[in-house]
Every structure is written in structure tokens, then in C-alpha cells.
Length: 113
Image 1 (tube, helix red, strand yellow):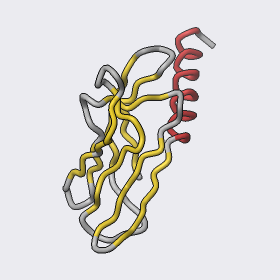
Image 2: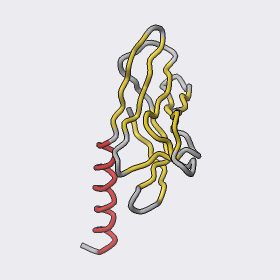
Image 3: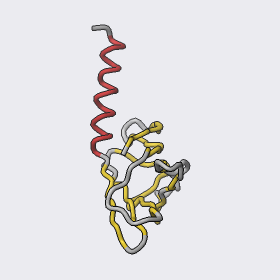
Image 4: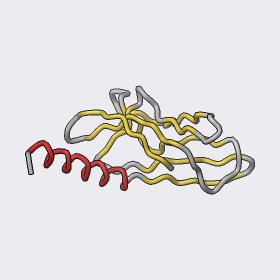
């Protein structure tokens, strides 16, 4: 196995581990629902490019957080968006810029929900 193939395998496995660690919680209430991202401690969500959830009908919901990091670069928990209808599950494509705390690098992530 060549080194670049081994490196690609490590990147893919690492990416899957982090992606699996993300959780999405949906809290239905009244006529709308609150969708909250649960982010593992090893990752940060870039505040300069807020996460967006593309719904199947084409609408895009933007996630927000009440608190930012001291340098205003990262969203701090809770990171949430309001879905304008009542639901207990959410489907769509989540797009966000995720920063690894160890590598100090942000990368675009696309996750199908």
C-alpha cells in the first residue's frame, strides 16, 4: 500500500468518526420545531459561515448560536435553527464549515440527514 493511499484511508476513517459524533436533536413544539446540533468537543463550528440545512423543498434554514467564542470565530452551544413547521424528524442536506481543534483547520462538511 502506498503512503498516499494510507493517508487517504486515515482521512476517511477520521472524517467518519467525527461525522458519526455529530448529533441532531429535533424538539417539536407548537407550530414549529427546534433543530439543535450537538457538536463533539474535538470540533468547532465556524461562525463566519453559519451552518445551513437545505430542506427537500429548496428552503435553507440557517443555524445560530446565542454565544460565540472570544474571537467571534466559532459558534458555541446550543447551535440551533427553527423549522417553520411541526416535525419530530428532519430531512435535508446539512452544510457547514467545521474546524478541528487540534489541526486548527476548517473544512467544509456536507451531511445528508
